[in-house]
Image 1 (spheres, rainbow, N blue to C red):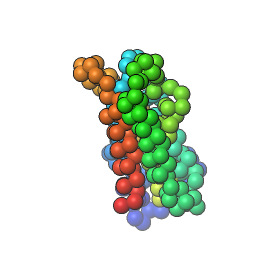
Image 2 (image 1 turned 180 degrees about the horizontal axis):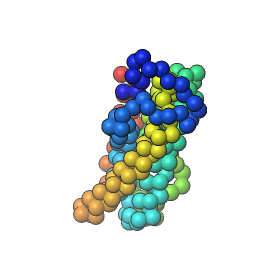
Image 3 (image 1 turned 90 degrees about the horizontal axis):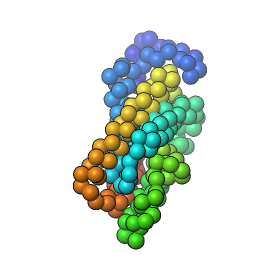
Image 4 (image 1 turned 120 degrees about the vertical axis):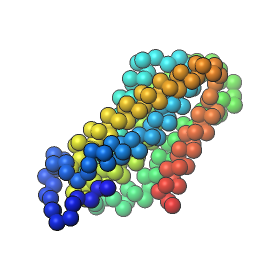
Length: 207
């Protein structure tokens, strides 16, 4: 997907290198694939948030989108030298973050957490930061890959961030609508889903 056309070597000039190595269709498909975890987490957030506001949707969408755009830049800057080192543990970082938040959600559902859930806002503070980092780890690896094949990074990072922000907003709105229709708490199921996403990331990187 990332390989430049044979016989036409190109020179990369910093982060402003001309974007030539991937078709628009490939780039959009890549961005959607990277945003799937963010979409699922946003859906869970919408389901479990007692009251979902436009400000919360905007806040989580911007955070997820910015992290998805920023991580490829970090990976691209790290380049070939750090690739094998980062690749060895990035999936475990994502798993640990998602498992931590998911476990807290499940424990809250099993305990008497009714009053706490009414005031908790998962679209702010450390929980938003944790989820933003966890769902953007794969984008870091993509940035590393683009550096290895001599691709530019600004346009891919921008598209990845915009797609992630859009799908995050869609996930939250869908989750909020489903939660309102069903009228019940999805706290425990949401925690299981987050842990499941973390396990999926580990399996994808170790298989």
